[in-house]
Image 1 (cartoon, rainbow, N blue to C red):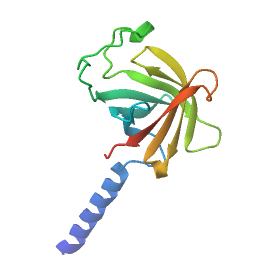
Image 2: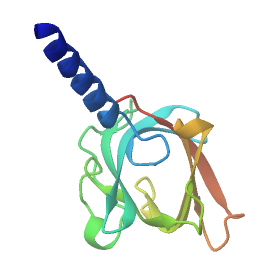
Image 3: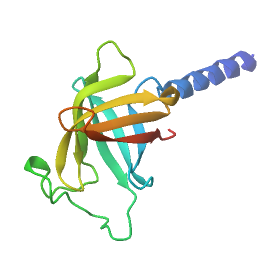
Length: 153
């Protein structure tokens, strides 16, 4: 009599766990950013869908010896000027690129180190385990790319 109840409870738990697992066909979730110049891990970012666009917020920074744990964006302009980097939305405006389900474009990305905002695009790769993010001026040919790694949930 208890066996069917236990089986139903086990199936419910399994279904819930699968629903909470990362959707690998979407860039939404947590990502570990990798510096394209040094190859070192730099931060953990959270990407969410806000108002129909993808936005990225910095949730953790892996500090270098010369960096302050409470750093602010002193080179930023406008609303981000002198605001804490942790918690800052630094990626915004990304929307699906045409009919592609793995590429997003039309956004902007802020480099908190120099305060500059660049055009941005992103594409999922490696079965959703990596996100290739490109910041550029004018044309994607003039820019830099980073490969971010999906964080386990």
